[in-house]
Length: 247
Image 1 (cartoon, rainbow, N blue to C red):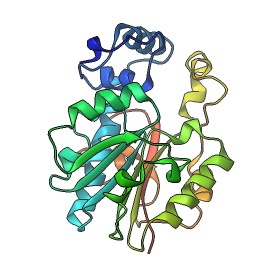
Image 2 (image 1 turned 90 degrees about the vertical axis):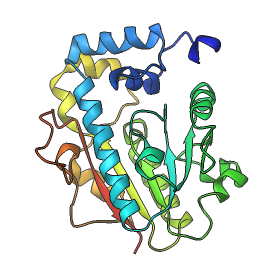
Image 3 (image 1 turned 45 degrees about the vertical axis):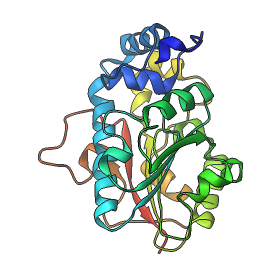
């Protein structure tokens, strides 16, 4: 699929993660970037598999609570245990700001009548195609899946985005979230690769930015420790996360 597209010159975080997850929707430029990062940090596959497992547990928990609408921000490549696989029968709208990723992801979910993929920015809900948005924002409680994005937003932008999400959804809606911890500070060469627009946060700081969202009793924890199926994965606490509600 990706081979039929014009091959980008720059790596994509989404395709790098696909590589770490063992997928097939990545390019040589993404593999090279992933391996360069690992040379400064260490193996990443288990960390991202743990993060994907957290996403799966959260989505299954929400589906069991009766949530059957999901709006996914920064969705990347929707394979390897993504939302529609963990909530079969639910309406799912994947969004991403990268048109190459949207094209690739859209072809992967084209055979699923309740799943769609469109261009969308988590900081501009009104910019999402209104017909696509109406598939999931139809007055029923919805789960917003906000994973892998917080690190690329400064505090003010992140707070505004989370406030806007809260205003856009009905009572009873949920927010699944994660953020990059300060763990990467111990690896200065790897941190330098992330550039000046990369934002790590302590749990208390992220909690402040959630604004009107109320975290569940699980709290904000390393993602491997959020309702694990059996023994938690033994991975660095690179990502923390949880669920929040609009009561």
